[in-house]
Length: 511
Image (cartoon, rainbow, N blue to C red; front, side, top):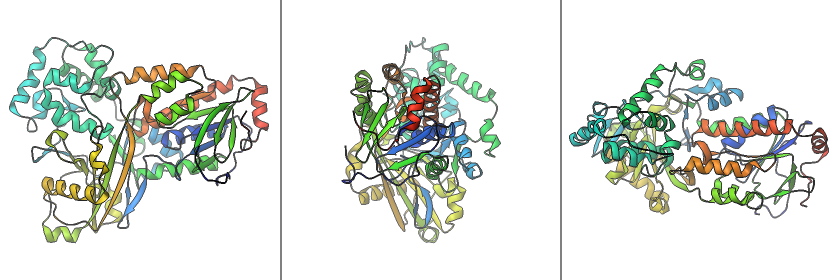
């Protein structure tokens, strides 16, 4: 265990109330969502976060005085979980759709408008991607209808499957950059079942891949605009942000947890998970030992594996096999007057994606001042944009210093858009081991992990390592863990809960 030399409780409001005591380990958005659900249901909650702040990969910051997101910058609005959480903690009026949803692909030295007739880069017919792909690639797409059905079994790599049916160019120029932006992984290894489940299920029912894509598109068209998005004025937008940044959401959730009586301890790592003679959990940190009626582990897979090794070795072994990718975000601020002096660059829409096959360093660029009106309103004299770099297997660039990442970002931006001005400020944010990888068989692994943990009383897992890396998926995993804990504790004999109500969660002892 590591932490301060002198074990002292970290600042935080004491846990109050008479409900069972639940310790949530991990203060990313999944752990915060679990804590919020638990405390509003009447549980006594203590959340432990090893970092000095909560939020994980959600981080609000600033550049040249302009507020920006230095981590995740948007959430999927067509799923209700994250929007509902934002509303529950008082941020509903700050939800905002992007000012523009058009984007481009920087392919073969040209910015080409992002095609619309596809599902995660997989087209329903060749005409949908005309202008981006070569004539030979378009003919290859049309030949999909002539191929016999592919047996995709229980899972398949989406890149390998699409390449077999429609050719490598579709994968390299469209599927790869789209999936790379989500997982920072390799499309030829990413699980289709985990990453694009609707397309996977459709592909099992239809004879060709194009048929499966069109079935998914028809299902989407037949679905009414998302109720959550419509109710918040998002107008059915696919994505949403928060005025001031998505990075403001964790702090608001933490404040709501504290206001409801929960305790949040930052700079406090869970060093060991123990079982007492009374059958209750004990979570040992450098500062204190906490007795708990239940535990939610919302930590990265390797941390969770270490905590579970003595209690569920099979689950720990599976968790240890989950790999993570690292990436970096380079945020840049330019004076608009400097852009005028050097010639206005071509900055269409909200940004562009970059196919790795072209050999560039950056994987994407977001024109933040154009995508989010709150950024433009806060700093009208600045143009703020950001690039991303790094994916699984390409970590060598991330070992270079910040100045190098800024320089290569500027070089790629200049080549793509004609931007030649120098930024007045730059911020490099590194997310080492930030994104779990979902290879073929990932969901089967998750099921084995959950089955191995099922035998442990009042313990659940949550986070990006399991069934979705997006913010709504992480919120959903936290709420699911909390709801399962609450259901299990509701069936616990009253005398055990009564014992927990009289215990001091900060003065427990290791058995």
